[in-house]
Image 1: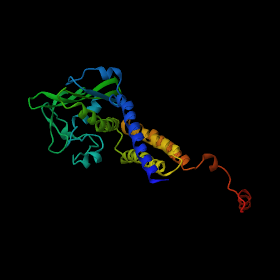
Image 2: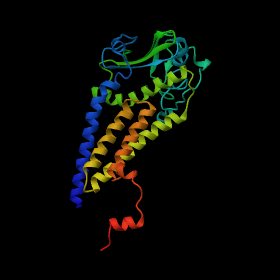
Image 3: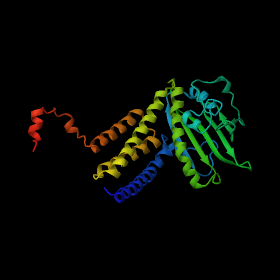
Length: 305
């Protein structure tokens, strides 16, 4: 294969993958902006709602509001943490350490108290506290006008189940539309994990580093398979199977990043990609179950000239 053809493949591959990622993200974006939330929860007014962009995410916790509330009031850097990917936040120097227990010293939160994003970065202050119901904090501009609100709500389903809802809202002057669009991407990753972590804590499920390891491994496996498919697409005359595998890997990465599937589904998606890689490499499933030929049989099947 000529160098010119390879470069044509590289450019075509980049264009195709970027197209798949952009179109795929636009397809999943409406889901992740309201991940887990019902129509009623999306439309419900919450304390501190600002007129502008907003998103709502939710999860069902098998616990009463008073069992969940202690975990919420210790939210924040230097307190109970952000209940998300500490390792990722700490790569940027945020110094976040998610608590694995209720911390009595951080249960006396009051209106006006700071909520810090990172050490020394405390741009938000508590604006609403309704025990076992609402907790909200806001950031304001230089004129003292709210520009961002983060609200946690506890909505009882029955005596033993509660909906935990996160609402973020922004004023029209908070930031440019493109900046909000960029913010959505890390925001959904961290909030989905936070909802799941608080659910587990309130239900008495202890922290497990294995869960995060599986999440990271599943993501890296999909990325690696996509990279192998990309190399084969560029270097092999038969390009259709590697291209299809690369597109599938890109779609799986989108799902793993923005839809927070359960661990069993992550494993299933990766197994599907591995099967596709095997086929792309020429490992036909039918041949896996054929008995090995004896030497005379192989010689008869492939006579020497």
